[in-house]
Length: 232
Image (cartoon, rainbow, N blue to C red; front, side):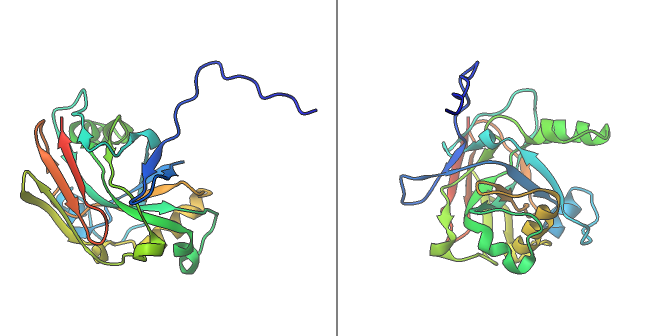
């Protein structure tokens, strides 16, 4: 008989998962990959060359994804910025995926905010250190319910808009991404074995800026489900 699985010495953490529009089912999350500087105007506003350099990636913790509609202002920061993004959810994985096959691996799409402790990120950059302290923290990625690609297709363009307290802060089009979704998936799969449950945040247009407690952020990009988040 096979040996019994040993008991955990502490309770295992809950599975990170995202809601799906119109369904009681959940999308389980394995990893969260984020691409930086994928819109030229945002690269410029952050002081970088917008030329088409190879994609730059970092990761957030899966449990930083938060569909509650609230964003608790994080500790140890006095400058927290919003970054509006398209989220890609993979339904299957692999390695060395070709661009031609990449969209076959996509389960669906959603909207997300890559919230950033900009002051801590700036300190890390200046010291030549990783960005995780500015990017990966509790509740760092508010998300909207996902929409299956079988229902909405694969969005190649769309008006991505973020307002804060009704004032327009960010606006761009998905067709302005320097690296398109198939290119992103193909590039990532050269360095990692991707898997079902991986999600990718695809970068943000220009207009990132600070939020304070009491602010209401609203993100839209039809036909995706909009996202409303209150800073608390």
